[in-house]
Length: 227
Ligand SMILES: *Cc1c(COP(=O)(O)O)cnc(C)c1O
Image (cartoon, rainbow, N blue to C red; front, side, top):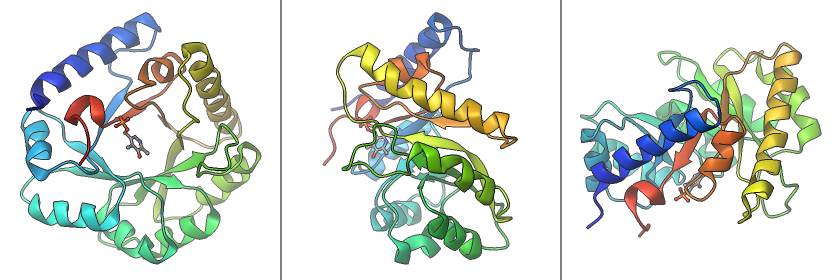
């Protein structure tokens, strides 16, 4: 059996140690628990241990979990590939979407965000490794996209997100994340007020925190293997 409270406590300690080591302010790295292909029992176990933000990749799976867990106050983040015909449900049910990579998707989410909810928090997904198999927009398209998204009233542009090509060497992981940090600074310099750099997963969170991540998305390290 996976001991989720234990894993979470260990991970929190690790995040704290990394913040100190890399001269990041304590508490500056937010933990998003990625619960895709994990049971509702495991989500409840994490919730009871104090974890209230969860990320899901598959809309139908997420909606089923939301209705089973509707007595809990969970902040849900959508972190999966967005199919155009699913934007309405995403806009209706999530607080955050990390995987916006084109204007059409942003406009659909903006138009479909219900009036009674606060603006939808979004991150623009960057294909930082210029990898044909990865989602996200190219680096040079991000600033113009951000400048447009910032004017969409039902969205709150919060920052950037990436999933780099998997690398096993720390310095190579850092190099990819460093490019994200530079892009983040470049947006700030162009008066795009963002506060979120969503990067780092179970296997590369050290490098992500070293390079300025403000939100790591962790699944396996908390919940064990997925079904
Ligand atoms: C699955 C997933 C994660 C978590 O991955 P782990 O390696 O299990 O920590 C993070 N981000 C995204 C976008 C994912 O799809």
